[in-house]
Each structure stands twice: as C-alpha cells, then as structure tokens.
Length: 264
Image 1 (cartoon, rainbow, N blue to C red):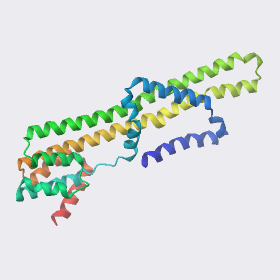
Image 2 (image 1 turned 60 degrees about the vertical axis):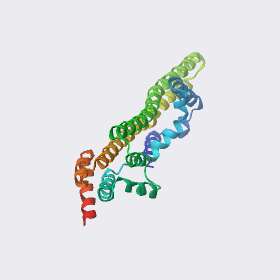
Image 3 (image 1 turned 180 degrees about the vertical axis):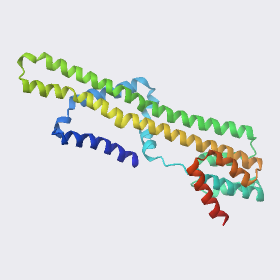
Image 4 (image 1 turned 90 degrees about the vertical axis):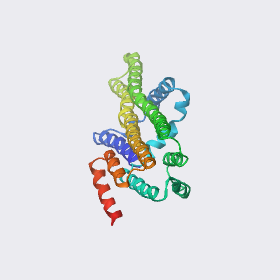
C-alpha cells in the first residue's frame, strides 16, 4: 500500500507543480505521445526478455506492492522454541509442529520435513540453498524488466519529441507564432512522459524488487542455518546467539525485548 501511495504522490506532485505555474491539466494529456512512449517501451521490454518472463509481470507487480517486511527477531524466537522442543522430545516431535501449522512458510516446512525424514545435513543445505537461489533469480528477472523499462522510456520520449518537432518544422511556413509555440510544447510532452514514468514508476519498482529480494534472501539464509542448528542439536540459547548475527541494530533491540518477555 505504501508503494502505491508513493507513486500517486509523485505524479500528483508533478501535476500540482505544473498547474501552480499556470498550466492546464488537459495540456498534459496527449494520446499520440502516450502511444509512442508506452507502446515503444513495452515493445522494447518484450523484445529484451523471454516471453515466459514477460508473462509473469502481473505476479512481479503484485510482489512489489504486497510484500511485507520480514520479522527476523520473531523468526529467531520461533526457531529457539523449536530447539527447546527437539532437545526435549527429539526431532520426530517436529512432525506434529509441521502438520499443526497450516500457515507455516513452505520453505520452513520443507526444511523441517527434511530433517524429520533424516536427510543428511549437507543435502538439506544444498536443496534449500538451490531453492533460495532460484527464488532470487526470479526476483532479479522481474527487477531487470523494470530497470530496462526505466532505460527505454526516456529514449522513447525523445523519439516522440523529435517526431513532433519534425511535424512542427514541416508546417513552419504556414503556422502562426501562437500555433508554433503550442505545437512545440506538445512535442515535448513525450519527453515528459518518458522521463516521468522512468523515474517515478519503472526505476523505483525495480529498486523495490531488489530490496525485497535482499530481505528475502537474508531470511532464507537465517532459516537454513536455524534448521541445520536444530538438526545438529545446538543449545537453544546458542542457536539464538548465532542467528542474531543476521539482525541489524534495531532488530537486535527488538529481539532482546521479545526474548525478555518470553523468558518472563
């Protein structure tokens, strides 16, 4: 939701500034410029990426605007609790934990199921790391599409402006000064569309997807280490201390507060 608000705020700021300077909203609405910029950008992106990747654009956009921040402190406490249970009741006790929680993250479920099934630690690591890498590659492909669109859009805007100026200059002899000024202003709308959408839409979404991927990879790496620690039978407190290395300063303070409440 915050991402959508940010995009709306960005475009609204441009429009408001334009109108405060005496411009009219209708002056910004030019169908021909939109066709050149948006049509050209879409065509360039489709040409640049496999069609299978392009077809997933809807899912990529959904991820960009619906992904939630990762709660790593809470996740460490979850694994610390699992470590206590397994030291007391054995790894097989995780079977009930897996089946009882319908909302358990599929990646965590898969890892826990493997250690319950007795899969070798090295194999557990390799399987989970491969899945994490494949997920990251999908995120990076989505981000690359928007980065490419952010590069193509301004160029398409310039092309639209040049085409408009060619048209203006072609009728220069028969145009009045007023008509000439309006035609030149109209020609530059294409550049505005290209630069505006690149910097307020495509590039920010690409950056957002990269940040989401970074957060998710940190979480998955934490999960992998936690699952292997549990399989190894590491002391719960030691497990928590080792996993705290994944936390930043703010998350570390949050973890300490939550841990104190649990201990109390």
